[in-house]
Image 1 (cartoon, rainbow, N blue to C red):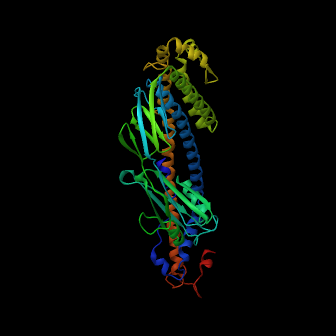
Image 2: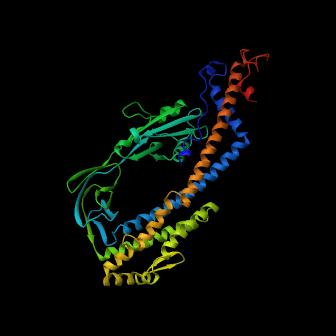
Image 3: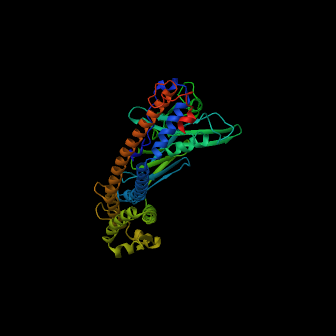
Amino acid sequence: PPVAVGILSSMTTIPSSLFTSQAGAQVSDLYATAAKSLMNQNPALKTIDAQWRRDEARLSNLGKIAQALDGFAASAGKVAAGALDMAATSSGKGVSARLASGTAAPGVHSIDVAQLAQAQQLATRALPGKDTPLGAGGTTLIRIESGQGSNALATTVKIGSGDNTLEGIAAAMREAGLDAKVVQDGKGYTLSLSGKPGAANGMRVQVAGDPALQALLGYEPGGSSGMRQQLAAQDARLTVDGKSITSSTNNVDAAIPGVALALTATGKADVTVTRSNDAITRNVRGVVETFNVMHASLAELGGKDGDAGAAVQQVQGQIGKALDKVDAAKLADMGLSINGGKLQLDETKLKAAIAADPEGVAKFFSNGTDGVADRLSSAVAGQFASGSALYKQADALEKDMETLAAQRSQITETASRQAMLLMQQYSAAGSGASSLFGMLQGPPMSAFDFMA
């Protein structure tokens, strides 16, 4: 959820005046240590973090439930849109085609793929070890930007003393949702960072903190950079029936009405959309298979925790009601039965029904209102609507996480101010200007004395 982004905000900036004291470069690390210590001693913070992890896990489970429903919705929705007797095939290995909606019409379409979409890939110079500490271990912020204008995205990754290795940095990036990994070749180990496909999604990497990490990870297009570009971001380019099309991904949905294309290689292919009785069998089989995958996924997720179980029961109940309204005898004539909540298909019976009355079979599954696919598609779509059980639970969890984020931010800010005060006292200790340390006699306190 949006509230999860940036919750672990960085501490207050340390005034540059602190670096003029006898403590010198130690002040920054002392400040971070003091702030961390103060936060670790706060029992409320532990409670907040535990509640956050609980809510995050529950929200993740709800997301997985939604994903399970979405997979079936795509299959049932296609059939409900009137595409039961339609099929799309491709003559080329580099292009695959499938029906996406009932707007497809019979015909043959010429495809010529000139270029595949590609994500930009950056890599650091090769280093001898993937677990070797880099730099002095000070806190470093890495900001990865991509896209332009309203589509611009930015992700900030915080690297601490325990993460300042290639493997640690890659893990921190992956945790932030980035595609990062450590790769070994004949020269050593490199950190590889991949963006999103599309020419508009080139990356910029800014680093604040440890100079060693700045030199290693920074990247600006066309400028002096630590990372080097291995692959450039680019769009897919193709022609469909002579019309030029550009796509930021290799999944092209708008080139042919009702047909989704997946590009895997350059070259030419013909995509054929036809009506056939065999298509009815394939599409019904697809609905049954995706329904059973959804059923198995929901059953597994229902055992995660009480909240997930309650959500799954409500979803299964709504889908079950939709099936209860279908004529069981007619369903059996089509070779379909329900066993333990799963659909079973007898293709021999289905093909016999299709041979006898293909139009009747098509209408049984989709007539625009109460066909089997119509009912199931409507029941699944209802789970995403405002006011549904899934919507209410997700909304409540996000609001609770927003509250937790605000509470944590307040505690973090308080600890930051307290740590700053301690560092200012320490900075002034040797000069006698400190109200706390000014009365002390003898040489200025060392950093170790102060922290002790």
